[in-house]
Length: 182
Image (cartoon, rainbow, N blue to C red; front, side, top):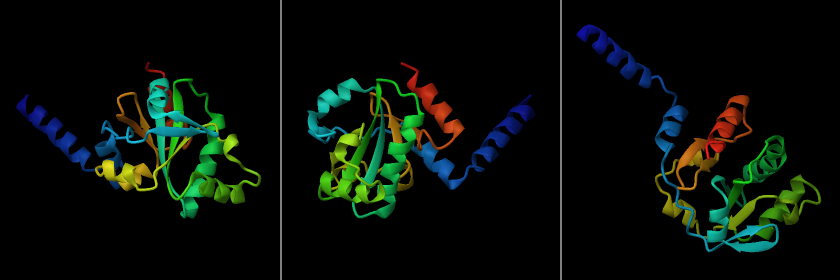
């Protein structure tokens, strides 16, 4: 019996070392808490709403960190706009784009070069300006690789999923399974 237990432990220990670097990052990131309560207000279309009201309304939030001046970030914003339409979203879920830059208007102007005639009122999600990189400073333990893929957090600000919910069929299933656990 001891030999079987030792074999099972060795297999479990050996298989843990088989994780890819990305899988290790995801494993380390899951269930970490994210500090997003550092903002006073959030922009929705052209309206500013208090952060507390925003946070009380949504049980699940995909946190997407973007930087103005980063060409892939504009493309990433557009991908979110285009792909979330394919998901059946709950009223308890939203996306929060945390934007490091000079202004939201400046960022949207650059996005409109990718999507002609795009304006902020077309964005059905929330944006907050993080001009001083407070989000990164308050979350130093977050791996940048994971952050670039988005983080799904719950009402306790715990990370439940790393990656875009629309990235694959498996990610979509994980996303739906997490968000329906209310």
